[in-house]
Image 1 (cartoon, one colour):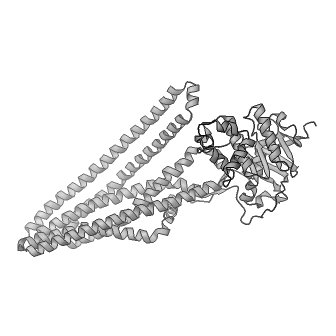
Image 2 (cartoon, one colour):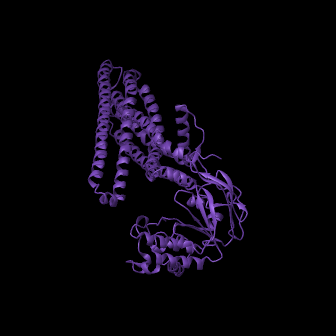
Image 3 (tube, one colour):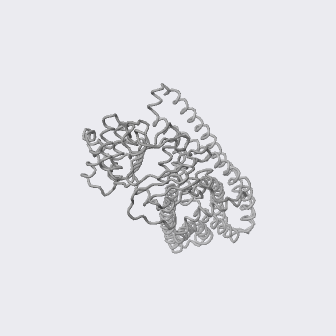
Length: 575
């Protein structure tokens, strides 16, 4: 099997319209579980908007009938009806907004959970080929853009389209002649408006992207503050940040220019239409083909329709830009992991710890082979070390055992079963892995150790810390075991972090131990003491270590010298 990249993507159409339609359907698919609530949202929106059509017709009746007749009772009845309509509109609008926010949040939550599930399944090469900022941007900016589609654009556009159709119907029934006067201004605006809205949306998108770049730069500046100071590069970094900020400012000004241009042109068309309506309205009223009330009603509805139409056109352009922001998420969801869990895994009983490499060959994506025709049988309970110069595949062999990657050639077996046939839980749950640079979470020392076995008691945590030579320095911390270690353990030294990582591995009680230069950050005395504790705690269990200092592995059962991905020598320390 050839590994070209972390994952292959499902074939997608090259036709832009078809691709956008599929993207649209994919985004909408997260709303399907809430179809009933969406229907209620649209109905509430239409009820709230209907008041904007009913009230002008009531004004028409007031001007043409009630006021000339001086009918106080009819006026009182109309006033009460008006209060009722306004109250109904307010309630419908409130319910609509609450439901819209709830549905949008739920759909965005479902999408974010799907993305998290996908990220969990993707292999190491995905993360090694992409910066953390790109993944964080997916989880924050892109998902937020899709949430905006859910909370605003999808239900709003349907409501706006239905309202415009209904309002134009009311206008036609009220005065066909005035409708014919107003329609050209609708059409002209529809012809000109979308291009301005698209331009505004494009600059808005560009501004958001540049703000993301600026935010990443700030994150980089804060994270790398020690290096900037060590190399006296703070002014250089500051200038980079200022240049990025200036770019954001320039783009923001252009965006503001197009916003105001759009609104100005919109106002021109509205005012031109209003002037035309007043001219023709005056003529029709003078000729007694139109009443004053009917004209007022028509003009109010015209004002609302122009506003709603501009919103509809703007939303169409904005929706297209936001759909493009959803595209990276869809591409991620279409990725197929190179390392997949078997559908019907073989259950493991008692684990003996025999690991067998059978003619294994492996290369990282788009790179030359790292492991070549590697065959080795590691006996249960054996302590074996991989040694050799850097870049010859020692750490890669440990990653292959834990199925961080799958070899392109040959196979690896655990107790005679191919590891590709085992569930991740059975395989990785039986292995304790300590990296050269282990990750510590930002919470307390106690919780970082408990991560190895969540049900562990405080006493067991302290025993593991003592075995890892960490107990003494932990007690000297401000809050002892309850001291927060900071992001990635930044409040601790390299040796302290590594001892906590070793304690975390020890408390999990694995059947197989993988040590990737796990004690390299310790001083000689601590390293010897930790090694003695490891030998005592994991006596009779398979232990595989990658080491550079031969003194740390001189009592291992076998030492394998790895050179260019193959076994150059194998034997005991004395041999």
